[in-house]
Length: 421
Image (spheres, rainbow, N blue to C red):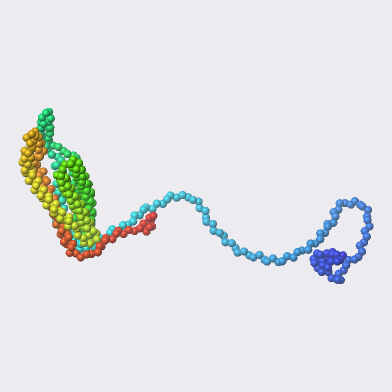
């Protein structure tokens, strides 16, 4: 056995390195070859309890471990931001009053020569005469409505014989339905008169550069509504004519009724064409005046309307003269018609004479009112025709100018208001 000189561990003689620390043995290493003393066996004596010596554990060879690099210092971590937790508390909603956009008034268009002519004609004495006569005509028409539907009839009685008789109590009679219908028909012409005065007041304002078109718009709407009613009336006339024509063909009345129906149809077609053309041209003339007032562009009105006004004035004068002549000789005309009845129908002659004596009573006031209405209608038609011809003659001398439309109203959007949403 040999001992290591470094750690003192006991090793076998044949090993060259220490089993404990790995040190190499030299050749001159001292060997422990001394004899071991013999140990005589001793008799067994019971001794107090002794613990056996601890068994020395062989020293294990430490394994080589490479040096570990020193731990690197980590950078300090920044504390993460955590938002403060707020407890929800309901609050009443805040309402902001709505701010309406500020609309700027449209700028007045500078007057042009065409607008100046229109303003001068609309505020002239001729226009005042036409508007005044038209207003007076509307007033007299209201009086005429009540006069025609409230009348006094004489009492009469006629015996047909054979136990049949007819009598009328006479006295004051009121036709309420006729009054209501007359007032409804009177509303549209009255609104046209209101539009004429509105147009006159707009043209009379010298401080305003442009010309308002509210009066012309009101007149145009009333004319369109009147055209609709006239078309409906003409449709009824056409239906009646078709029924009459079918009846004449069905009974085989001969050539004479067919000729009469054909003449009536031609007159009806011509009247429809003239009336519809008149109203279409009248609406176009009003639109031309409005366009002139808004754009300053010279635009002539329809000469067809002015000519038709002259024709209607002449026809009205002819009807007035004829009505005066017929009224003055009404009794003689009725007497001559009754004399034409054959003697076999003498009882009918007596009845018709009694009825006409009570119904066709000449009322001087009614005659004067009807004549006044016709004369005022003629004056209005002639003054309007003269004004239209005069306006066209003055507009014709102006050079063409491009339209100058009024600027649209400017407004501020809502999103520019801080308190609006």
